[in-house]
Figure 1 (cartoon, one colour):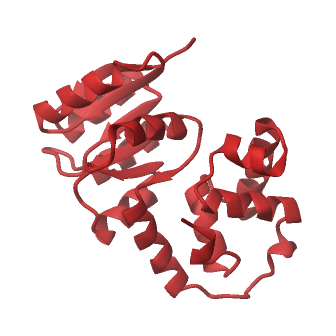
Figure 2 (figure 1 turned 90 degrees about the horizontal axis):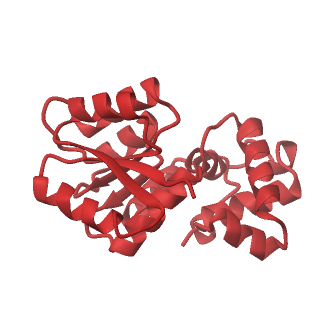
Length: 220
């Protein structure tokens, strides 16, 4: 079994050590490097090309936002998972725009962090519930509703898949819900991304919210 390779970037050694110990208990995860600042994180990712980079926001030399931008520019196949104490909208939107696939707060349970690593590696987006509500509320409040009917772009099935994604369902859970295969769900998501000209679940969900196709009732 191929392991999911991970680097951890945080300027607190105790956080890096604790996270490493947690992840190394999992058979499918392998920590291949640690960085104490943003510049070192970018260099590590460029050299090691890990599957996932866990990045803090507040770091010396290069903050998490700039580090994420550079990582996604240099090694776009590495998924960036933000792990931080900050839930400021300023940081959240800057990091999502920079290409982060997930945004977790450091009060998250260890199990949720492990599952988030697996999820972003599988191309899914992960947002801490507090962060998700901030993101969704902001886009709902500024939504320009009824500009387009979803049927103009998406099939009925694709809209169903998008709504399940908005509810935070994994590909497997969505497949079970619709009695389809995981591969079929992945194909539907690929078609959705292509039609909406977006690159991730989060972007697709935000697109749906902007257009009024989704509401806060569609999300947890």
